[in-house]
Image 1 (spheres, one colour):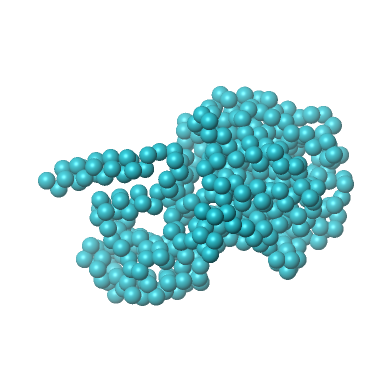
Image 2: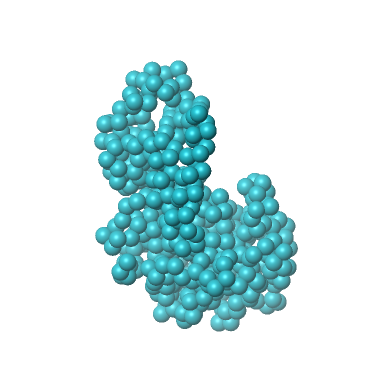
Length: 436
């Protein structure tokens, strides 16, 4: 792929002045920004640059692949993710904050697999230093190297001016002496013991503004309590006892405020339908250098719309009623450029071929991605379509597996051809046994 020039700035001056100024507030802008009594920074996390639509390796979100590219031959969803980061940098520069603190998963993978991802990411981050804005980023579970000699993008990014990165999986303190600030970094690590050691090392430095930053789950959230054996976690009390003036958290994609100035900023875009209710955002934080009072502003980002339309329960409904509800659901939103799913449950098998496909195609032709998820008591999902398809495709298990494997990105971490061959053979054996 030829390296292309990414449009660095994506937010217009008009949008910043008419929308963001109102969100941040006149008092904050006039009395806190550019006030030497405050350290003002942006808390961001989980930008996942280089995201390709594959499912999370850590079961955080399911696959949502959109096989469509922009004019630069870049996957549209990857481009969306890039532009979300560009917005973060636009906001930092527009409001002249002192620093941007990134709480992990800046990129969606480790190593140096994709020159375009590294170039695009670096181009955005290096925009900050000419404006005197510091940048600190820790590694997350997605870009923590897990294989020998693979490295991480953060090794290179950390060589940029005014950029500090923590990627070794151990505690590191980053001092910003001109602001009297210490950023206590506990990046993602290789096991829970190492993570605990990093958290144990966090302690406030007297006379400084102390900011903690880590990438893990907090067991107050049910998802992490239920999956504590398979992911790095900590208890909220542990973070409180670190006695930070503010704690930047990354990993959980839904913005969450635990009190005690301990917060997840949330991700900068939605990566799957399980995140459809999330509001992608960043947090602008101001800490008074003497009193340590903290003031925050949640700043929403402009991202592609995603809709999981209200499910249709086809039980005890006629085919005409089902088709009428499908049209009503699809007409209930502006679907232009959107990522959309409509689920129909308890669909009688004999209705399957009676779905008004022509109306569905017409109403969803402007979607970036559309999935019609038809389910009954024995079949989970029997239909998928994206804007690239000409018609709804209903594939058998074996054909569907080959289609799926074609869409799986070959990132060099596994033998795709071998996996496809073995997977197909095993599925064929199981299919033959079940139908013999």
